[in-house]
Amino acid sequence: MDLLERLFGAETDDPGDPRVGLFVDGPNVLREEFDVDLDDLREAAERAGQVTAMRLYLDEHATPGLIQAAEARGFEVIVTSGDVDVRLAVDLTAFAIEGRADVVAIASRDTDFKPAIETANARGCRTFAIAPGTFGRSDALRNAATRKRTLGEDDDGPTLVGYDS
Image (cartoon, rainbow, N blue to C red; front, side, top):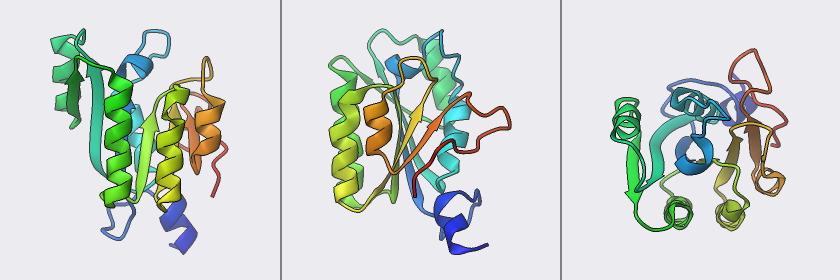
């Protein structure tokens, strides 16, 4: 396996793979119109390296069934009574600044996360924007990230669509 495959697309459990932190904006992504499965988000993040942290951010209206399903799939569920976006952005930025991940992947369609992505990039952390679908997708968020993927654009599985190196 060559260096570019290791850095930008091979899916292995090699301890030398980049550490990926996956941050999911639950209220923005887990919507009926997108039909997104948490396993699809994890598989997309695995394309960037070894997923070492998976966090799903939800508001106080989240159902116990959703929380239980997410935990069963290995996600750390963070329920906040405040603004989900603020908590997620702060946590993502902390991961990048503290070096807890080599890649921070965000599943959202919200432009509000652009400053967090830009901060991670400035600190040398690679970034990965995962959009739940083309409808309402944030081009600003996608353009700020070093890699990007839109779920559902490729029927052959979790390959990347239009990624940047």
